[in-house]
Image 1: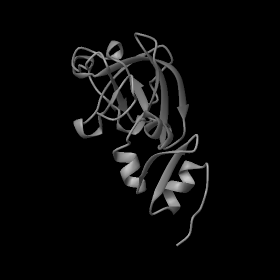
Image 2 (image 1 turned 135 degrees about the vertical axis):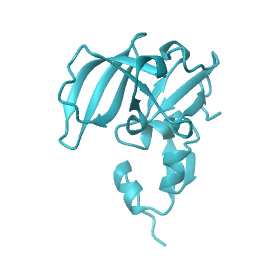
Image 3 (image 1 turned 180 degrees about the horizontal axis):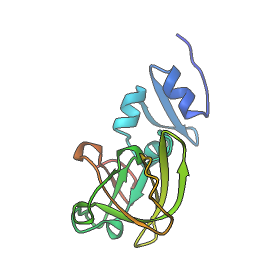
Image 4 (image 1 turned 90 degrees about the vertical axis):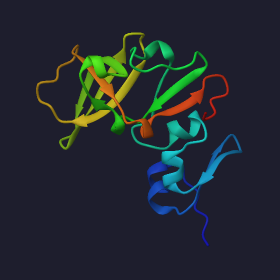
Length: 153
């Protein structure tokens, strides 16, 4: 048995069988890398595990296709955001910056209500800053959190 302490979440995800996520000396979650990635206990763990970090949306960010209670936040990982037609979209945003990383693009967008988010998408050479894009995701990739406590619902 070996205990390894790191602030590098990529290192932790690749080396560990079990991860203990600490914040201010308090245990936030214990589990395998897959457990923490797939079912984070709260918004802190959800935002810490994954690169780029998970996006969080309030009810005012969402299109009419998706609804949240007033006290809920929805989390979507950038790699789970799937481009789609506007009438099928959970989220629509305006492109603010495109990071072309060769194999894929990190699209930095802003919702109509002003929330920034990132989508990891296939490279499309016709995308431009200022263009609108719409996204949906599979139900199994939607994370819901209480907006007050930030705990998973």
